[in-house]
Image 1: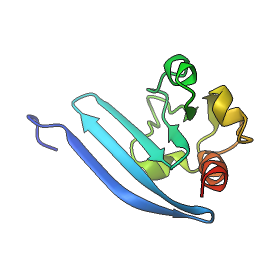
Image 2: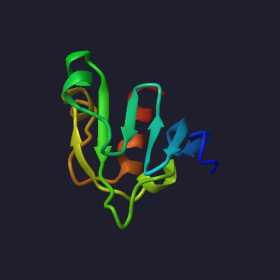
Image 3: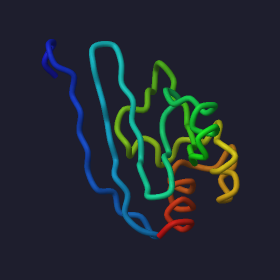
Length: 111
């Protein structure tokens, strides 16, 4: 990674219930990743839940650690969901499920 420019990548991710877009953004001393479905986002802990909930958006977040950060969208697959908006809960998403399970439910809710 260049010291002058941040890095962003995106790619298609294939799930049982459909296709989503995986995104990774990195900069000096920071990063975040997300899986964007047609119904909502499964993302890392950088995402706020209050604002998307106010706007009726389905967001589920997982949290990495300093020793094991979530950098690439595939890192979310096995990570546990630690928070979600009411709209995500209405899709069946709950704390403790994996990011892959949450993405599958979002894809199922809006194929």
